[in-house]
Amino acid sequence: MNKKSLLLLVTTVFLIITSCSKYQKLLKSSDNDAKYEKAIEYFEAGDYYRAIQLFDQLQAFFRGTDRAERIGFYYAYAHYKQKDYILASYYFKQFARNFPKSNNAEEAAYLSAYCNYLESPPSSLDQQVTLDAIQDLQLFVNQYPTSKRVADANKLIDELRFKLETKAFEIAEMYYNMDDYKAAIINYENLIKDFPDTRYREQAMYRIAVSYYQYAEKSIESKKEERYQHTIDAVNNFKANFSQSARINELNIIQRNAEKKMTNFS
Image: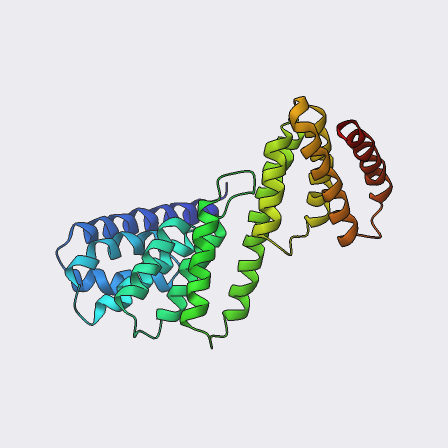
């Protein structure tokens, strides 16, 4: 390492140590005005970690003052920029509730919901956060119907609802693959009821017909007739909705088998 590079390194290390020392002194200081000015400076420079530490100390002190609104919004936004979306959502929601007339209230309400959207897990996991995000996005749309963000909010709602659809479909598929046909039927039917326009509709209705047939096959004798009839009804329902489906031939075979077995109960 040459002398110039070494001098630059030493200078950099010195500045970092000095900066950290000044920052630590400021944290321990009782000069809240100085903390406020420095917190704003850190925030605007993108040093969100340090800004958060200072804002955290300042919130209680400046509550009810003209500075409280700015601190509240910057505090939430700093968490958002740090990708701490759970806390950011909470603080944005708190800000929108505490400062409903603020010029930043609309943005805070949207970002609170958007943070939950960002935290929404894959469809295979629990979807409570997804439900919360949908609720908050819909609340935003209802509260700010003329906002330029309404279109984005509606797109996010559609995306999250599809995730819930997928979750419901995956649960039904799980029962089907476990040969638990009764549970599979219930879950496929609930999927169609809860999401009438679901893109899984054809697959779900096909599975319902097959599941009823398999369920009938495994049933005790006194239940078979009723369940074969459900099979026939399910096949007819499928054909009425998907007359051009490639699955028609397979379902026709199942229907004929069910009708043939129905004759045993005449």
